[in-house]
Image 1 (spheres, rainbow, N blue to C red):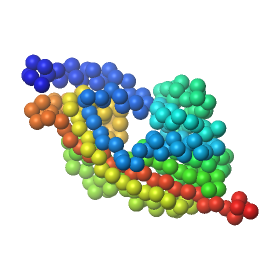
Image 2 (cartoon, one colour):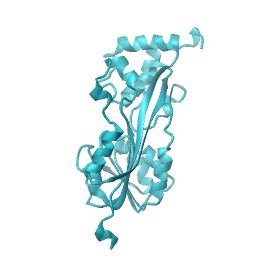
Image 3 (spheres, one colour):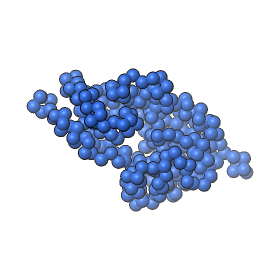
Amino acid sequence: MTTSDRRSYEDLVAEAEAVPVEGWDFSWFEGRATEARPSWGYARAMAGRLAGASAALDIQTGGGEVLASAPEFAPLTVATEGWPPNVARATALLHPRGAVVVASQEDAPLPFADGAFDLVTSRHPVRTHWDEIARVLGSGGTYFSQQVGPASAVELVAYFLGPQPDDVRNARHPGKAREAAVEAGLDVVDLRAERLRMEFRDIGAVVHFLRKVIWMVPGFTVDRYERRLRSLHRRIETEGPFVAHSSRFLIEARKPTSRTASK
């Protein structure tokens, strides 16, 4: 790219600020940012489990995009979401497929009866409420989830907030998820983790990412971090893409089959 081809900081940031942030559609980043995908293929594996379930629940579904990627739903498929713009988006996407979308705050108890589902899924939940998941799973039911792991995109976070303390860097550790699942009465049958390369190729991609993934740099605004953003814009122009690494883990946990159910 020549100097004359380069777009200005103001142009890139204005475009990124104008892009809606509802849902989990990341297609806007095409050509501007990349993130390697985990080897286990969560969406494909989730779809296989949905096809074999009788009653399924997707927690914190976002705009419903990941759930909607499954070619076949369980006969009863329900999704929860707490952010109103995403509730509307998920409803428009999933209702035509026969799925029910329930508005439910992420920290509230799940509004379902005990043992209502044989499959519960979630991709990148903000928090995992293991006791509630165990409660709504029926005997022998499965929880299947891809989650953000420790120190995800820590290079980007540190650029704006400085070095992160160990307790922050080690939060969301897959080992802690295993312990919490077991404490809730579930058997962990699969647990895998990977770190994956991310590249941000222009400052607009950084701005949109931080607007969309709001927990990375809490309270992020362009005005608040203008000096750091302008500096990063110059760095990307001279040195190439800003590189960070995401952290992901896959966990599958099963509710033991009760003696009563096995009789």
